[in-house]
Length: 388
Image (cartoon, rainbow, N blue to C red; front, side, top):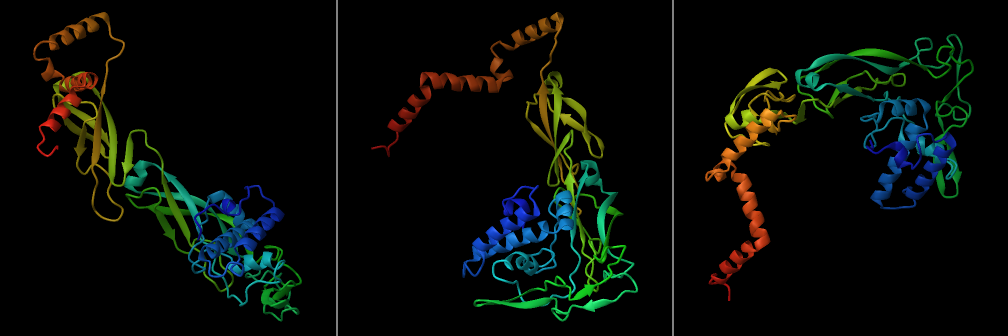
């Protein structure tokens, strides 16, 4: 099915009325219809995409589900298109006004729609695995009329207009097409006394709670399929499936990239200079990290197998700790004096060995302003035997 937003495809807002929606689809369908764009694969794809969007948004129940849960994930039941309800249905509804009909062929009982549920979980639960309860809307075959739509005890008549076929053949110019029967609206039957419980729809709508087991190691975008937990199909057809899609929430300490965890570690100036061992947090508890003397800000350390266990294998990722040296603040006069004395002690003849990066930087700055680098480059060029 299309991954683009349905409203965006039809170039309408989310508050679009039924009439405006139909008008927008008519415009798109007229522009990209295959009969007007022969052998144009791109136009055909646009036409199918627009029909898919209209098929969902023109159905109040499907539109409500789509608005509530995002992209409904209605895939797997209609071949290449992958959306529920049938491409021909959407085409017939609007194009009946233009060409006088839709697609030919009597469809069989349609499987139920697939549903998709967006589940927000913490990083801890995603890494360790958990079980959560979710509440979803459900569409079930009415147990009062068994999906017929007729009040128990009443009769369901065969439609006299289409003879039970659900479609009638229409001729307009050189077009000869089948379209849903205007009398029975494609069902092939007439219900004289609608079922009181489902109001003739054949289905009831409610909610249900499901317990979902989340395996360890899942990440954002991973989906869990619950077979048969989607909407009920037409009588004689299977239910759709429910796809639970993971969305891992942002963590206050860790960032995740695949199976690797990243953590910024504040480090005191003294510990960075002198070295030592400190405790760092991991998702499994504390771990000891050895800090060598002279550690610089931005330096990274690896804790093996302290990351995330892959959901698809037994491999465990690493945790990368990046040091951020923290400058002391709000110093007392005594502390300032000590630091000034310490700084003075570094500015002797061995100053360069204490701050090698500082001297390298300022030497480069000096060369930049004096042009020494250019002179050295020119001299090297003059001594080049290949320079003629």
